[in-house]
Image (cartoon, rainbow, N blue to C red; front, side):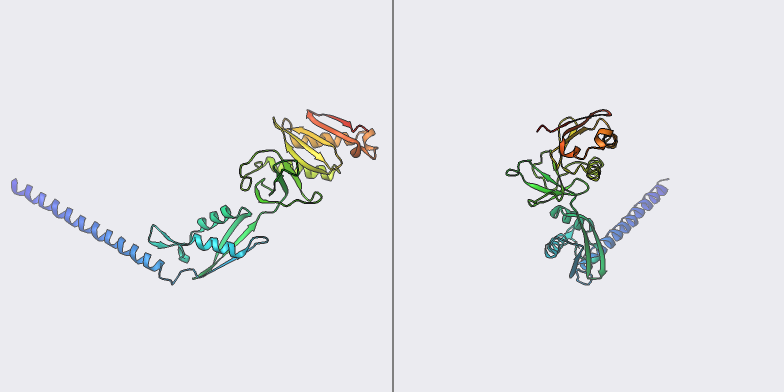
Length: 274
């Protein structure tokens, strides 16, 4: 009995020793492979020595390249070179470009060879201008895109090449969202349709309680709110314009002072006083 017990214990010890050796060999192989790949990643054979950028319309190519070069400096886990073409930090490149250049809406990376790649950027296009105040002397203005994203300072324009948007308070406007979609797109579409109807809107202001104010080029003001769909507000205006007295008037828009759409399907309006 004692002898068989000793044999069993001896076998268990041997199995543990064999298992321990296998684990040690396996871990050693992993370490060797990691060291070999770390050496290979920084050996220069597959390292980037040329970066191309494309798609810019206003951004400076050298600024973008410098930002990308900074992003691919250093190593992953202090071992693997980020500049190796096989393990480029794609997300890091995209995030860094978007963070440092708010004009960039999207990016794509394409490998050109074992030592080069190209980053193509898509710049944002303005659909309007957000201003911190209606008073020209005190305000700063910024471009915003179709997503309501504020991305760049805007100069003072003569005339009205874009719709102006007021309301909201941002400590750092660039990089902020004036209004989330789909609401912003719906409001922008509303203004475009009013323009098609010859109302010629100039600006939109966000008021309290979900109400809005649109100022017109000829001096009138349109009020509406979120209690009914913006599309319904347009239908109410269209019905009003088909009214006999208004449809035959040649100077209705010139005389219009206030147009109020905040009371269901009823449209209230008045004329400027002479």
